[in-house]
Length: 248
Image 1 (cartoon, rainbow, N blue to C red):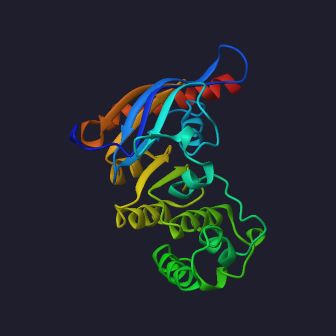
Image 2: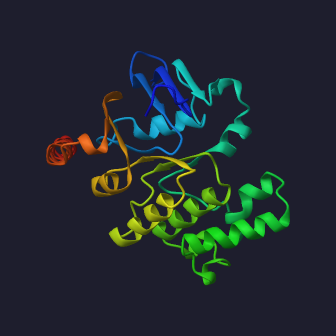
């Protein structure tokens, strides 16, 4: 990306402390995100991926440093306004007691969108995300976790934010369905994507940058083409084994 291209998001020496004390969930994180980026946040469990996503739409605020969105410090942007443009889909989403159709349209209803726009967006994204029509009247108790993940991603896309944050968004989907979700995102480059994932094959196939976190620090910010995937997979396998040994 050219240095003349303005960043959509910029983090400058951002740290996040774990309560009162000297332990940090994230420490001295700096990077920029540009319009249309497809960024995969990778790292072992506990590396800080979810904490970083939460900072980007102000579910948490940094202990140190500054985060900018379109050149404005996010702390100076009203939270509701910010979250309309930077939307986070958690790993285990909820439908807030609504059926699927009501959940899908909820972001637009909150924004006061006219009914014709709500109807158009709903029809478009239901088709794009292949949401079956018989799901629309179901509540979350009649959906599997994987089905709720699909609906939650569709709910965010109905609002058409500038930036979509996904926290392990396809962890409960089979490989084919997960690829289908990312193919939908790939067809909409106007929405910048930042996804935390352990699925390296999806990161390889659909992302243009990898941000590698380890124990709260940003170890590597690298273009996908420059990644040594064999080394990365071996590193992940070793980290998983170390984590298993700690539990045992």
